[in-house]
Image 1 (cartoon, helix red, strand yellow):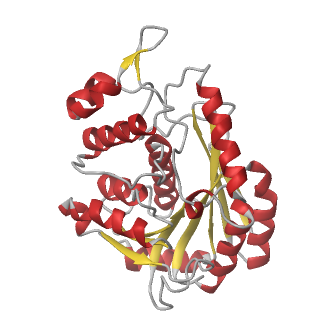
Image 2 (cartoon, rainbow, N blue to C red):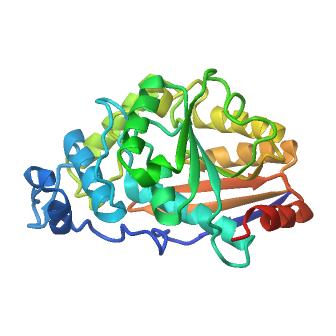
Image 3 (cartoon, one colour):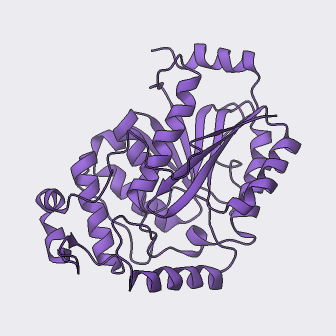
Length: 319
């Protein structure tokens, strides 16, 4: 198993193609979406800011970001559902695009089909992938309400509508089964797995972050407000979820070029690497990401041999 690490720096910054560098341009965002204006006020330093502990303010900020940078006129999520930090989600898509570029003569391929495991009510990875790279997506989720919310977003935009297909996962214990057919091919999978192992752990983490906001200025969104149980926690948490994903991915080893997932806890990496070695992954990449004081990483893996990788590129990615 070949293993490599990207982006290993003392302080990891947002990807160079990420549109969300530095502080938010709140003046520009208010022009893009006037509904943001009531939430924008000077902070104790006299700079314009919003209350990042207010879920409505964060959701409205997301709507303004999606409108200004991705030309999306409608985006909403049901009350209590996960409101993702867009800069971090965009970073994932840009970094994983670079993985594909390595195998396409230095060019990011355009004819990509990506499976987003657990797309959620917000549908954020497919939105960014379609708008930035023109890729096609399959979005899966175990929650019918999430699928309905994501479909409403997709239906509001012609570009998304022709590029994203949603599928309801009927068995919460499965990842690729019931979503991918054995003969079906996707170039890439992405996933933001449930982070916590219990509801209590998830609530404790949220309380800790909210407490930190009371005495600390925040320049970018670092919280995921809301979230249903399948979005924030599952039995065994991130570690068990990813190991199950790896186990299933072996069964679909010829169906996908690169599998990938976000890994929030560095302590989970050793067990993930061990699982990938046991499963017979031919190549593994770890990509460091950072936003403000928050650090995470992407782990990506493939089962294809060098010859199979070349054949995949030559048959699927030719423009």
